[in-house]
Image 1 (cartoon, one colour):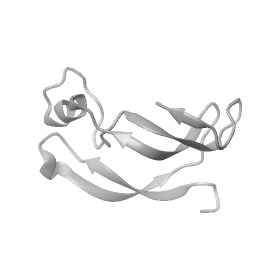
Image 2 (tube, rainbow, N blue to C red; image 1 turned 120 degrees about the vertical axis):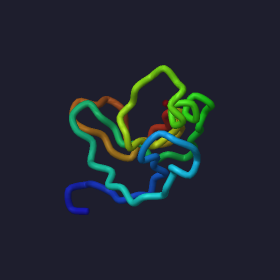
Image 3 (tube, one colour; image 1 turned 180 degrees about the vertical axis):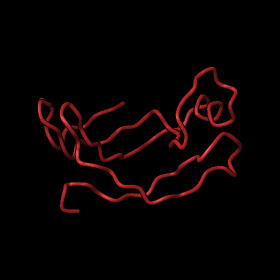
Length: 93
């Protein structure tokens, strides 16, 4: 894409519920803005809290639709203005 955005696939939960709410979707991953980085995920983890959030029993209110999984490791593939990290650096979040 000309503006630095990429296309990717993501598992998305459109609303609260069981695993039948999960679907693969094509998504656009924008170029990072100021103070942001874009990470190419090498591995991701979905924890029990993610399941509880999806089923609506975790005491947190997050916007829907959403992609489950808070835990990732990967490599920085693009940086926005003002970021002191370098492309290719390994990161965990």
